[in-house]
Image 1: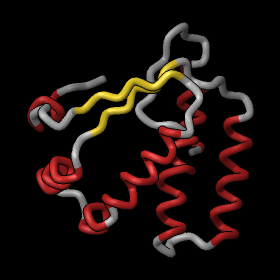
Image 2: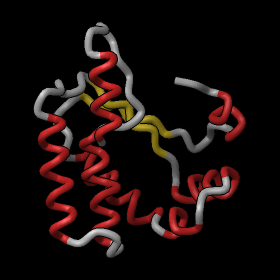
Image 3: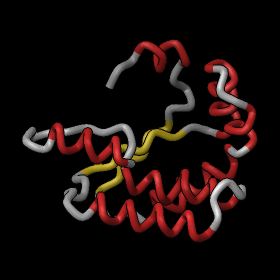
Length: 128
């Protein structure tokens, strides 16, 4: 989360900025997933949430969120191809539900794009 804040600070003077991930997402999805899986306890999660709140205090809300999604089967295949650890594949269902909860709670404009039919080769060579 600290590195995301530093990245924002480095680009804050630009008119248009695109980020791949956000501090909100880190807390709502990844930290919550680690809490559910027992990698964080409640006190640790609360400290991280408080830290996230302090980092977000000076950041503007996004104008638009582009949410790329794919079916669970497609995502599992992509994770296998990319060689992600088993723990990530084993928690994919939980992560997808947390993402859905997070994206559904957003007040900004959200564009959902189904990337299920996008070829992995295209994703690997595409740089946003």
